[in-house]
Image (cartoon, rainbow, N blue to C red; front, side):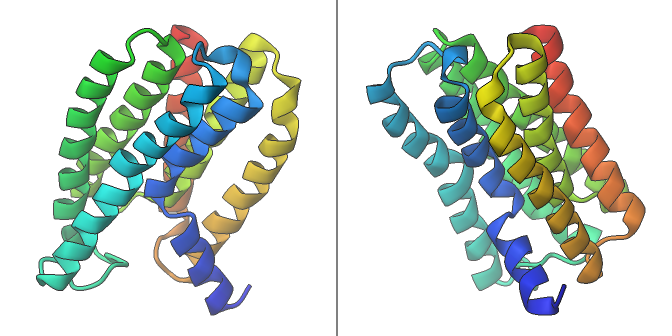
Length: 205
């Protein structure tokens, strides 16, 4: 792996992309698990991308432009605190309104609440330890998928599961290659993300 590839993987599969990827997989590879029609899925997916990816990304870019953070890589724990907690507050508010609006579908709400919970805990962990949010995000998707398949028998998830598994390994390797994290920070993020998302589906879906 070279630096350009490692950087590209880190940017493309940054943590804020993970909710959108999770819902793409849920809507189109495990459609039996949600109660919304095909006509509604695209609009809902766009809305999810706006509130979990586009708006938070704009807020982080604004922090960079105004000098609140030195770089988009946020290499230190201290530099991560303001962006992480800003995103956490936004996700919590979004989760509340999301549940009020789409309360008729338990799986959609469970996924959103779980992702919000993971981000909230990661933010507090970051006060003390520079845990890898990249690892937590991708491993969290794996956790969702494995739990969906184990509990609801969704063979159509096999292909995406293999792909996400390979991506998880590649991104974890990229974070180590770029010296953005120590091995325990990468491993800790992966274990936390996977366990949280898998347990949420297995015990509450």
